[in-house]
Image 1: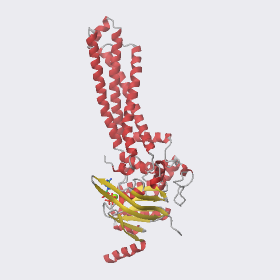
Image 2: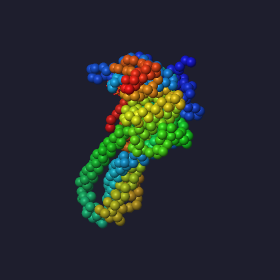
Image 3: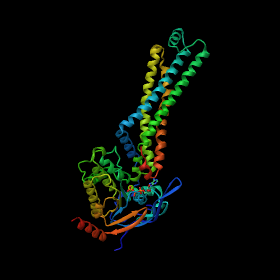
Image 4: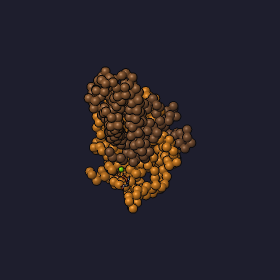
Length: 245
Length: 235
Ligand SMILES: Nc1ncnc2c1ncn2[C@@H]1O[C@H](COP(=O)(O)OP(=O)(O)OP(=O)(O)O)[C@@H](O)[C@H]1O
Ligand SMILES: [Mg+2]
């Protein structure tokens, strides 16, 4: 069976001008992610992970090169289509959660459903179900300020899943969380992938998070330096464990 | 559906009627969301409300006071003249009376302008501190136009309500002021209604316009930003 391409970047370049100097945040990144895959993007700080995420998510435009989401060239989309893509196709999770502080967990989760045109009663039921899935069934009417960091990130995950996106983009979703909570979040993402077939792309610093991934893409200085598949990872993780014992 | 945004066929696609919906909210839901935003941000909203109410009240009280005193001065008999002189709003020669009046009007206009600038700044800040939220809304699929509309309605609420309450308050204040500095008996119902009809629309109209204008400009700028830039903004 031919695997369906979900995301394809082609020689993506992103430069920032800092005075007279030009910084290459991304310097020719070509990457294909298939439907239903869990891909981790690893790399040191400043290597261009977030920049790549923003390109894939249609939150920023590349200086050169193309980004295709499900065979559609993102650069060709008009504002309406771009909004549609962000609303339906992609769920975003950020390191800083970015949930709306004055809204309750349920209101946050139902917001993108409203943008998608779902009726209010339907949205409320679905929102409650999603929050239950992420383990916040008892916290529907809490404001972000009344939730812990891990719980806020769960709200963000539920919100990202609101319109049954095909892709979840998570930029260091565990960056602000402790180890245990972080592992739970990764587990949750993994479960979404298994149960619902979402394509998950995450960036992380944490090597322990690699175990969940189907593939790991290493980025240094705006270029892909290495791509490891599941099999190579198993060997590597095995080796680490052998060394430890 | 648009040819460049083809229907997705995978197992992950939500179904049915929702798929055809546009990523924009109906007026009714936008209205409700605006109202919820006003309520949820009560502290901030109240500040905007209070600010615009104070400006509006100040304008209205000065405006109506002047109008009523003018009305009394026009057909003043000996008794009214004495009251006006006691209050210091009447001079014997018309030229210096006019000069005095001009100076008061000028001072009032200047004060209103100063207050309005301060309030505009408060409102500007109330939007600027929400630029990150605007970025998040864009990530969730909100159109620029929707964001502008949302903020427009919110500030329309606050501006209209604030300036109306303020105008009413200022109006009562003006009547009391005339009554206590001159005499309640000198106020005619006609002049009372006339100054309300003249000043009310100016106070409410200008107050609402000021609130909306001060809010919409930064909202428009933020809504036009790329989501990355909006979410990076620090306030
Ligand atoms: N808005 C910007 N203006 C100027 N330079 C930028 C901007 N955004 C990113 N950069 C530069 O691009 C490079 C890549 O940044 P990016 O945020 O993608 O790194 P990252 O891999 O996500 O790092 P981290 O792991 O710390 O989040 C950095 O050198 C950064 O300085
Ligand atoms: Mg980053």
